[in-house]
Length: 115
Image (cartoon, rainbow, N blue to C red; front, side):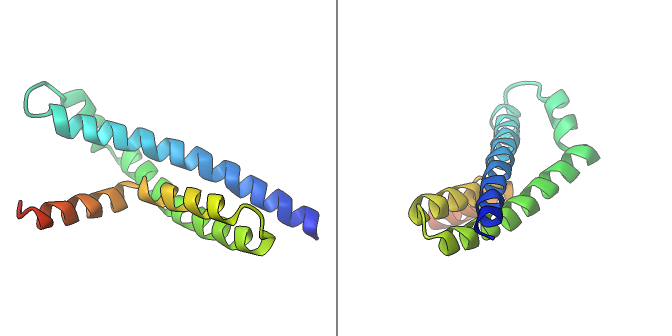
């Protein structure tokens, strides 16, 4: 039973790393489009970002990160090994999603009275 739990935790950790990397790439594309759209021609990048396959990838990645992060936190608490590191990585993964990033940007904008 313990071997299965260790393998499960290892698999979830690897999946979470891959999903976080995908999320960081998505964020890079989104922010590049936002930053450079005022001064440069970002039509090709914008067309990619508004395409249906990209939207499906974005939401699929976000939902899987939330699910895997919760499972990783639960398995970390059960295994009682490196709990702080595993929970920190799970929270980092959640914070890299575009949904949470957008919410954080809106909080900062409201603090500074931007809207």
